Amino acid sequence: MNREASIQIAKNHIKKWEQLSSRDPNKNVYFGNVESLAKDSLIYAYPDGRGFSIGWGSYDKLSDGTKVVRGTSITKERADYELDYELRQIDKSIFPKIKRDMSEVEYAALLDTAYNAGPGSLNYTSNGKGETFPSLLSLANAGKDTTEVFPKVAITDSGSGKVLNSLINRRKDAAELYSGKYNELYSWYLRNAPKVNLAIVGALLLGISGYLYFLSKKGIIKL
Image 1 (cartoon, rainbow, N blue to C red):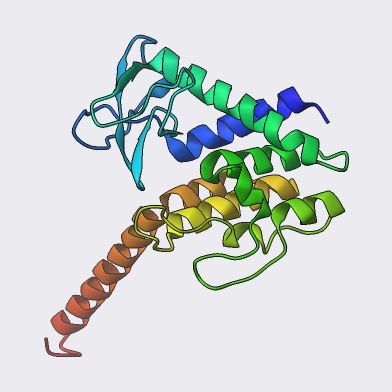
Image 2: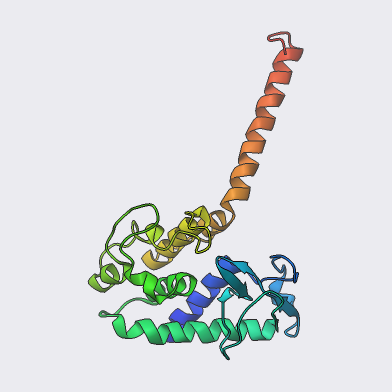
């Protein structure tokens, strides 16, 4: 396994889910067109669970020990550095626990989950829904299927304790990455599911309304 390749794969995967934030010092507003954003652009902290995050999801503390609180700001260049630094720290933490030769995408999926929920999440065997399961790390080391377990790991908000569909969808995406069956379109749907589903419902209601109006104009029904 090429660990550096895994880190780069995980980094790109993380950026799709975390998105760069926040452009507003008072609330969480994602940046658009990140690739064209100047490296000295200011990025502000935003509420996240029981604390604050900044940039690409850097939570609570930066690499130099700076506490992330309301009003904390860094540059886009610093946000990129923090993501790279934290991923490499996680790699150092979990790689010694890997007992077999994994593929780059398998290891990248574990890195993504560890980045989002902490390295300890790879050892979780239960969740906020009361489900129990083998740990991701044990399954990964045994070379067994992880598809059903990823969506059960670390799916509750650290602040409210509520199960979040966004976290379930992120784990489903990680499972796809791990399995080598990653699909960009499916990944986009998972990241945008609430908006997409609402748009589908809206389109269906609009279609039904139009059809009923057509029937009423034909005298088939009365509205």
